[in-house]
Image 1 (tube, rainbow, N blue to C red):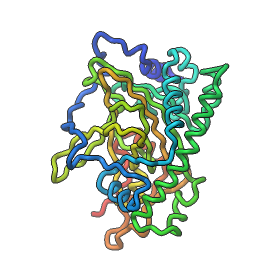
Image 2 (image 1 turned 135 degrees about the vertical axis):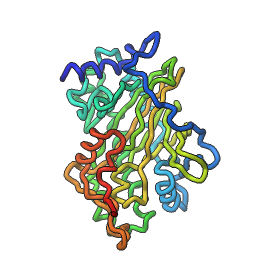
Image 3 (image 1 turned 180 degrees about the vertical axis):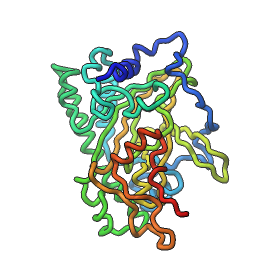
Length: 349
């Protein structure tokens, strides 16, 4: 691990966030690049009940018009979600020197540290995270040598429940576009072994000068779909596109108990040939309350090539995006944080 990378990880420690004034290394410019609005009226983010008879129609409308929505009645038991949040709090409450025992050796490894792309950012984020690529067992043994099983058991149960929910929802997304069951079987969603799941536990400590720091800068997720669950503290904002109701604006995602936020990712935009659009979002910091969240990512396996579904391509126009793999998209994001998909657009001229 380089000194540069070690320094980044240490600066993500809450114990190091006790400043009389915000250091330049953490002070972000342009936090007010667009107005911020509440999720009311035309900016009301859809909340979709998964037991709704019109589920398919509503999911399609939300993916095409927003790129983000909340889901309720998702069948994951509240008991499990409470246990999951409890373990997340338990993790981030550990002393800094203990958490650093499982520090990431590389930005894209599992373990403790910051956003995988943090080394490409101009400033440090006001956050810390713990990434699970497969199983947290080896890391948990280092964090709690005598009591690691409770953390692992809850994480494994959560993973099983999320994989079941993700498969159901991604299936419904494609059905909303008129894609048949047979056609879905020819996509990565038809064979779930081609889907790679990763989840990240995130901590956003409060800051007295919250309007000068960021938990996570504006970006879209590179995979297919992301599910976000939090501890009931507000902080997630999505960038609403310019429309008849106003210019681009940051919409604060409401805190609705026992719901998940669902973000459409870059590769879902590619697969649907632009019918669904990704959602640019960011994490802001509060002055008083400590927000924690878990982002569960559904992406293709590294060797899976993603291209627009033929059924969704206009014969007179052709595909809007080139064939791309997830690693190729990740590489472009490293070079152009938040604008990776632009490199794979097909110029129609």
